[in-house]
Length: 308
Ligand SMILES: C[C@](O)(CO)[C@H](O)COP(=O)(O)OP(=O)(O)OC[C@H]1O[C@@H](n2ccc(N)nc2=O)[C@H](O)[C@@H]1O
Ligand SMILES: Nc1ncnc2c1ncn2[C@@H]1O[C@H](COP(=O)(O)OP(=O)(O)OP(=O)(O)O)[C@@H](O)[C@H]1O
Image 1 (cartoon, rainbow, N blue to C red):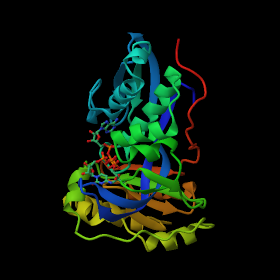
Image 2 (tube, rainbow, N blue to C red):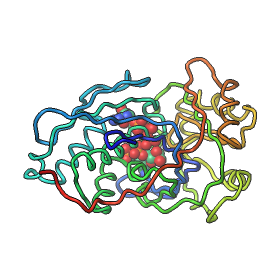
Image 3 (tube, rainbow, N blue to C red):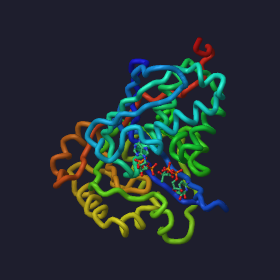
């Protein structure tokens, strides 16, 4: 990727156990997050003047779900948080920038598109502004933007615990393919957490590596997405999507990601997933098939300096 572009890959929760609840209402999770090849793209353009302000223009398939220059957009919020972090003296020297978001991931759909965009904006702005901040500060900024943002910084497979911000490496994954299907209905994350059945699921036992997809599917089949039943009750079409994925030729496992409504299925290879996609396409469903994202990398603070 050029320094002025970042891909924001879809985050998929291969399983999601709700293990507890904090006093502030946030839920404690144990989840295995991986990233799919499907992605939004952020492109940075030079704005006019200084002050570290971030403008936003949205284009792409799902642009109609979002507004330009919206203060609530997680990209604009990421810029404001970074500006506040460096303080007013530094901020007034930072060039203003415009970010063009090509929105190709469905909005509010359980694959963390907004979170991935926020993390990509942080990566892009750190580069564009030549800023160096510690890994701990970066993680803290990311967590303030959302529970899913820390894992999206590196876009590497990771086990998420705490409310999502405690990250440890995932088991080594086998080759496989993935299909993603979204029925076109947004599902509210807080509503799904609120309406899930009471009770908690223990932390999963995971190996250090899965050599084959069959091994991974065997273990994942013993795990659950504890938000799936609640999301299906809110949006019954999720059940139809899951039925279609289970019936797809070559599907090894199908499950909902995050708080829904997007569901994923695992296949032997990206080609097998792509070959099965026509059998699943239906009406206005969004269907994506391909490989996992295998280009994520740990984001380390830069040693160099601040802009002149
Ligand atoms: C469901 C997941 O996608 C799994 O990866 C995430 O836990 C959700 O991450 P997110 O969308 O970044 O979540 P946030 O924007 O931080 O929180 C949205 C809302 O979801 C609920 N929430 C979120 C994360 C969490 N661990 N417990 C919660 O109860 C809270 O009601 C919160 O107000
Ligand atoms: N850049 C963005 N892209 C998508 N949604 C955004 C963005 N900025 C703010 N939002 C808002 O964030 C909310 C969640 O969007 P997102 O697409 O991240 O949901 P999600 O896929 O369900 O996330 P998660 O899997 O983390 O629960 C939406 O209500 C949306 O309006």
